[in-house]
Image (cartoon, rainbow, N blue to C red; front, side, top):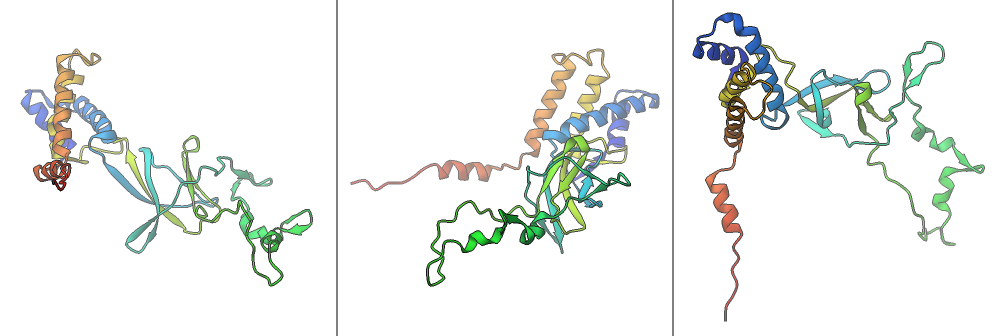
Length: 252
């Protein structure tokens, strides 16, 4: 893949329009806004960060965070995905003396000390047994530990909260960016060159707020071309899809 920079796109646009360098800040602003829109569903830029957990098993979201794709535990050169757990509470525990946030108590590790009507919780596992000590079944509702390590994105806190059983000191976050953590040296797919130029032309024209203007139509057409260029569907793929739709049958 070949990349270009926002700086190259802006300077090339200024030269093509015979505009002075004084228009550079405005064109740079429009190009960054265009990159933000393209990052959502067209360029599909995925950012990756290795973040450390704080004292109460949470990590702060990056400033350009839009949506999470995966949260993983780094294991060597592999990433082990962590499942989502929507039952995690968004509330935090405060220390009564210092007022600092504290982790929740791990109730799973204290299950052996809990009782129901004076009986330990584990007693029910040995209730339905035969005279020979064989389990007879009929025990329902026991849940597994598939979400022992889980996470939940809490947008109002700008954090990702993990379960209290999460033991890794850091986690790898794969997320979609809003394209605003950039500067004029940020690299952009060169196939988006004409699309960003068309957006600059639209927003710097008198019809910047009219979505049905000629300048807006030019941008939307260039965006359609960009989507087609980014599509990795080939002629061979199309032929395989068509041929795979035919079936043969034996005729008498």
